[in-house]
Image: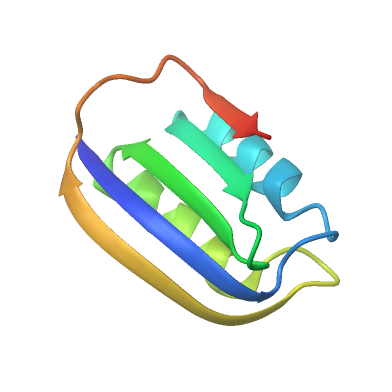
Length: 90
């Protein structure tokens, strides 16, 4: 199991980015959270199988319809097992 902490920048708020990421995470069995940041970025911490996390990152790089992703920063590590679901944080 792996962990990836991501920051997504661009036009990524107000386009249902968090909702789509949560939906994909639940489909792939990925645990963690996603939230909007005051500076306009979206931040997420995700844990799961490496293949599933790669699919999550692919989504982060393109975003949902209406999003314009300008960049994604990802920091990989070992899963800590602290999440039970994938939630949208406010």
